[in-house]
Length: 503
Ligand code: GLN
Image (cartoon, rainbow, N blue to C red; front, side, top):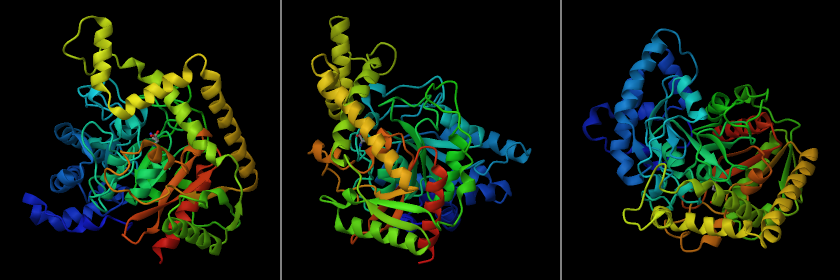
């Protein structure tokens, strides 16, 4: 069993009270464990879905992990999937296991809002490749999860549909932008979830909610059907209860896709083969710069302790200096906002989504639609993005940021010439209180300092729990590997998880 939020075991389950034990037992399983029970017919798919909705009925009002629930269709799908399992057609490890999907992943016939008013009624005509791959493997979708509007934020507070609360402490944020997905897994409102990570949006909420999240090497998972934020950095990945679940999901969703020209044909995507408990001889580097000012001492201590434990298990652990850390945030926000300003041009009130009710002419319609449809954080990013791309400023900001990006990539290349894994924190603090970050966007941007470099350089990275602070809040450990080396990440994370499990 992995960490579950403290309130998981003590909930009122309404009319399902009689089934309480069975439901809580089911919800306590990992996705792979549940998959096994479904495969052996011990648990019908329908019952797994019942458990999710029972749990949602009990706690969704409190945590608000989902934007859209998919009850009717999910039960129809469950019947079909059950039939295919019974017929022996579906044999994968996650056949029949429900998955929560972040609301920036298109799902045919199921509302996809990106947590924005501008897409409040958007029902896509197609399904994102990553979601489709899960469906082909037998996944059922109980609902779409809350997020920061267009994945812009670190707390899930910029959603136009209200905030998600952290299941470990409902007065705190779950992190973001995939906060609904992370909180749904932590609150037992689903077994696993998909998120997207442009600058930390899988890893950071995973850390704040005490779950495991993987941001794969850029190009590993098709972005087809993912509503673009910053296309050169966006990647889809799993949020799960443990490393085994996360590796299993990643194996299913990865693969080259003709519909995404940046997706890569790569061979070593059998990630579950890397679930090996052995770090002997592995070289782990810890950047000294990651432990400077601004890092909460309790987070620093937990991360250092994890490094010591890996060392005791046979890894070679060394501190080293990585240059340019202070430029990662400005480079990231310059590039991400530039790309966002271009990507978000398509939301003009013509083709889909919200359209202002009262306008004089076409331009007035555009203006009013976008003014009313986008929230303040999205507008801030569009303005900044348009500014850094404008003539006269392009060279000074955007081009310079691209150069910094290249240098950061080079710094990591140099580091990976010496180390297999880079180990550090995910976020400077544990989950902040609700409302704390919104008043100071710059401070919020700075909290991404440890995560954005992996996106700028296209590297794979994992976040997994490594302890709690004095308030009992989860602390995340981040491991970063060289491109295409998820296997090393998974092996290290799996070994560490085993060490922790024995404590
Ligand atoms: N917090 C970062 C941002 O707001 C990262 C978001 C993400 O990864 N989608 O841009």
